Image (cartoon, rainbow over all chains, first blue to last red; front, side, top):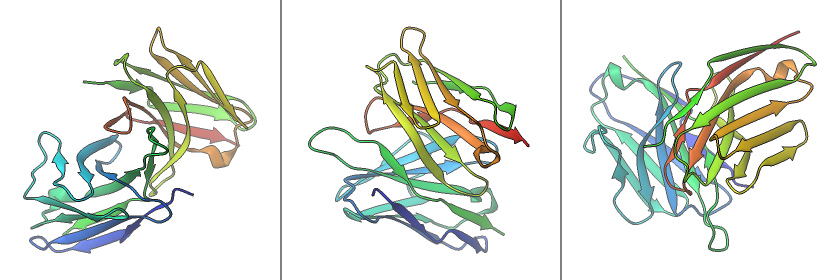
Length: 118
Length: 110
């Protein structure tokens, strides 16, 4: 159990276009989903925390208008990279956390989406 | 904030044991994780340990936690070529923000 999927797995787009990435928890309900960005040979950097039905909480330095996050249901969160530029090219990974019996649980990560902006 | 550090590279021979070390700074961290990332793929949770535990064993994996020194290690017994990957140490105060180390690249030599 605890499978998280992302779609698409990779995407190439032209500069100035917008790209939407989906993150789904397949077999559990995730009250909280997280979006990370990974630069080559670097660790994961948390971009934002997304709670179902409320606005996302962005980390310092992450542009809210650039990276739009929607968490419309307990199994789906989306990240939209608006007006993408080459510097937005990166590996984007989502994770989902569930509450188990009132106690906290670990985060389960999706396979990631590789975005290349030309 | 939390800072997680780990060495960048480890090379071992197939069949030997691998030990990947990690240190963290926030003594209130409740969960310590080890993730594996294969080339071009996302993160795979290998194991995690609660801060009130000293050791956790799961088949070939052994996690040791020294809470006093804020030191975490992952031991892989009988390392195989399929274990070659980047291993991330991570720390969290709950299921909220998780801070990752930079990752240790494990190279297994046949």
